[in-house]
Amino acid sequence: MLRELGKYDEAQELFENKLGTANINIFGKMTTLVALTETLRLKKDYAQAQIKAKELLATAKQSGSSKFIVYAHEVLANMLHDTDRFRESIGEAERALATGACLGKDAEFNSLSTRMWILMGHCHKELKAWNRAITCFDSAISAGIDGPYLVSANVGLAEVYSNSSNYTEASK
Image 1 (cartoon, rainbow, N blue to C red):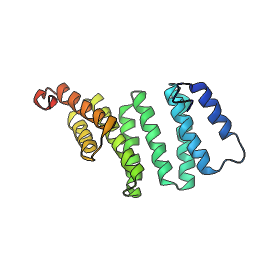
Image 2 (tube, one colour):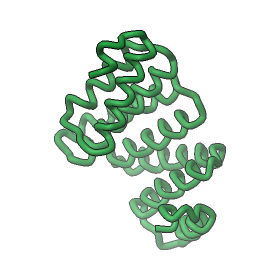
Image 3 (cartoon, helix red, strand yellow):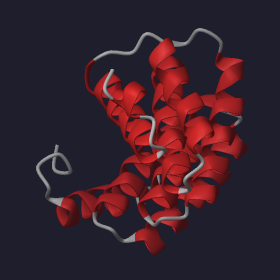
Image 4 (cartoon, rainbow, N blue to C red):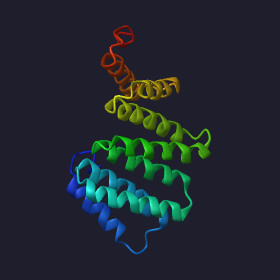
């Protein structure tokens, strides 16, 4: 809740204290690392966020939990996007999708895959790889998304069409 209120320093302290407890199990540790890494990313403390994201990935691999491996790649992909490292972000998003594919029809994975397709669309848009961006946004939209994800995918798609001078498609 602290993070959602913008109290990042307090949230960071809370998560770091939780990680410091001796009786935290591996799943508690991974959940806390996800929250801490996202908090650091939102604070724009990218160096520390990357360190914690890599710790999360190593812990997730050690546990064998595909879901947490997927989350670790998602966190890294978001952080790399935020620091304009678009090609690296695409690579992490692709790893998240590939790892998550083994989760099957899991609802969490469906939501994550939508987020990753949209993120990759935005990365390709920044790299001016218009056709790849269109493919990514179309993939997200065809998944049957709604709400803010649908808005983000449609806005991204319209920006790509506009930037590539395809005004007919952009106006749809």
